[in-house]
Length: 364
Image (cartoon, rainbow, N blue to C red; front, side, top):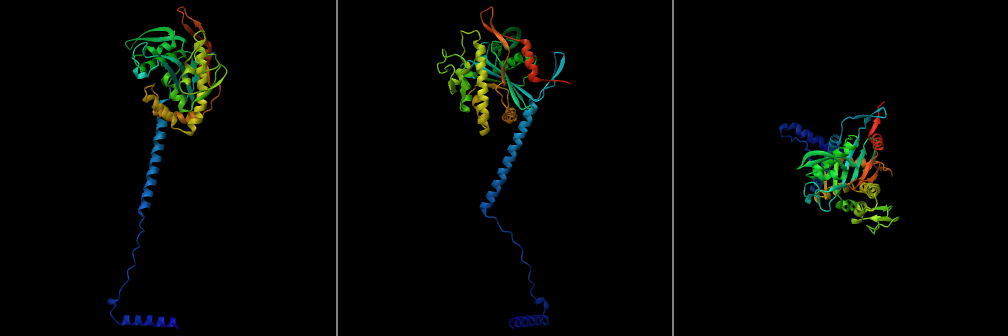
């Protein structure tokens, strides 16, 4: 019944309208849909997310562009050589960095330029990073190795003389020139090997690098207690602070092989350091950059390594394997010169073989 009543009223209303003026009929317009406004906190959150995404994308772009530039800057030209009647080609993907430990005892910027005042290279290590085979190798070169040295006079190149390699650094009128002269000398003694970068670090700054990774453990394999009582022969010692410096710097001055034995100790330290550093840096990728900044800030490093180089090399090194024989010493033997100085004479045939096996591949 209620339904019928509603129908009748509706019909009556329609009839009344039809008899009247149609212009008076009210036409209902459809309502416009209004957009629901976001609360202020949602807008802020949204734009924060957008900004974070842009920052991440920018950082990734910068990282990969840095890596690409570093990779391009470190490329070398093709090089061929002949050995035992066979032709060899220089392997692509190698990055060779000459690392020098400079013995002076003060921050390097305060060293007066000029021969003998800028310091000498007591540690000489050639590090080769193979980005194709994913491995690292190093050649430790005794400081007393006799080779051809470029002398200078007031910064200008002068004559060439045969003397100990460590002295080459002292002939630079600046740290940059000393690096360049030493790179050139090492390159020539290794049959014109291409060396892309050089990094010279004041020996006194070693504790900064060592302690940044929490120190390293080494076995003392040489009796040097006379010069450092904290390094008992045959014991495993944790190196921190100045003890790390003493381990790589002290040498037995009574032994003709004292400098060569010290190079072996430096080799041992590098192996221990690299093994520890790889684990630590995997947990904190900022450590290499922090060390880099600290060394530059305190004036204890002179290098042509760039931020682009480090950005390219760091991920490569972290995924590489490190074997116990990654560091080898340049073959040769110690002797005493006519002037009474200890010298190290290279075994040129053995050196040539190392260069071929490490840096070249046979051409079919």
